[in-house]
Length: 187
Image (cartoon, rainbow, N blue to C red):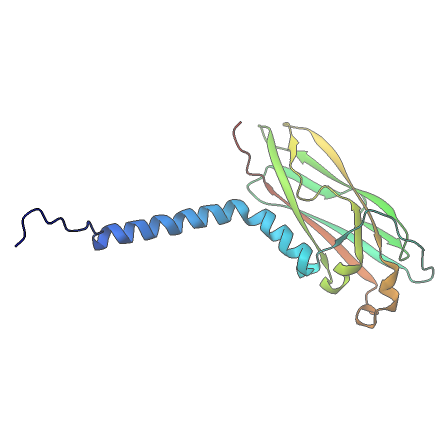
């Protein structure tokens, strides 16, 4: 036995397991906070789940004689004390025709609350042709008790939809939004 020899400190099996589990929990919490932005990015890049496209400009032309009905659906997560509904439940437009519709949200709770929405288009194959110019999605909306707000969506259907054989059967599209409680940081 050598005097003054120091053996390196090693984690015991329990400590190693504790560090591993704490790391996994930390990763899961981080992913929960990043899930909405990551989902948004994933859907925008891949077009997954009927993700609409974003356009800064209106369509260049209108294709008459190819009407498409667009229905509007609204949902609220149970954890958010809001009523949420489309003001205009259905519109019919020709590809290339720009239109503005409104959804209305009302805080029916006793306290101020903040919500944020996700969206999708069905059938999913029409998502690539649904061009949003203005939208409230993924933006935090703050409502006081009893307060209502109209939220516009400005969009058009890309005229190229009439040339795509994969969507020739699409005559009805549904734009659906779901509001969730927003994670609000204390400042």
